[in-house]
Figure (cartoon, one colour):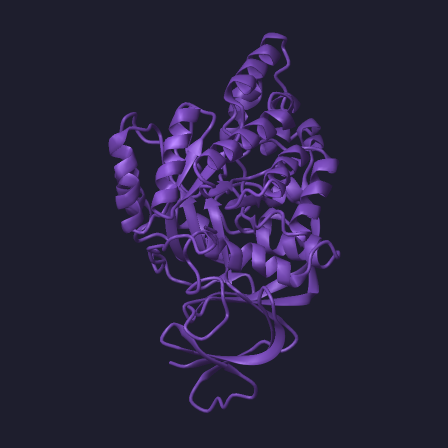
Length: 461
């Protein structure tokens, strides 16, 4: 059946105009004023903004971290995403057994998502080791719709500099993109053990064991390796501090191309003071929360385009259960926090409504740019004929208080409890189907489809 979204104010990354949107067979087929609606279902967006469905390119659904498992599977997590205006995710697959090929986890994750995901989804590969077979497999993964791979500079399957350089060279060759978790592993491990040996085991010492410069050094090192690989595309996940952003800006000033940067709402809005609270275990994530100075620097980077994407690193563990593993020792606490449902409204309320960023920048960083970087555009992240009819209708005038009771995921808390929110999502649509209406999920379990992604559209020669 035809649908028409009427009377809304449409926002894209560059435009702002009043128009109606005609939807047919899951696609946007026409945009214009005063469209006839005699044979169509009408959705009235009067007084509201109409945005492309948001895309979160950094989630960890059903993540097994060894000591515990994220409490949102691909059903609970994608319901939460949908209710927060996110209509597609690209999930970072977990580590698997040592020595596995890249496709091993791809097969595992296809089974985890199929029949559960309520929104469309893709995956990033995860490089646990590097040899000739892995390098060849990067190419076959790209052909299978996964033209991106993640490399960790810390944790159990961290890669060394020679491994990183080889991956960058191969991904440059196949027009793929490498995402990096940047922290100096040896420094972090030394500080963790030092603090623990001194009896400093409360949550604040999690932050102290992962200082700004441990991240910034790793960011700078990755950028130099990428430059050695002929400006191979680099995507820095969850950049959290001023020094890391300065390293990115300096590389760009030196003429380096193909550097893409992501931050997350928690690094824009929360500070390390959260670790001194009674419930400080809720905020143990890596990298940790920083200072207000860092938050301010990241907002500036978002406003001026130095940061291209806001994702979430959604990786929830219950405060009442899994997080309590760290009550006597922060090093025993699983790292991660929820955020996939809160992201869009936080960015609107704290960013647009408070004048920190424009509405165009919100759409760019939550919708268009992540799709262009990770090969989902123009089917996703756009409002134009031929795009999937993934839409969010946002009422800019309504206000509310963000509280766990309004959330839809499986986790037992939100990191933003009690925050006053300007604006409210009225309706969320994917491929022309209404998934959410007035904060109620009305979509279908398993309706999400695997997205075969294309090469990055942002790579410069």
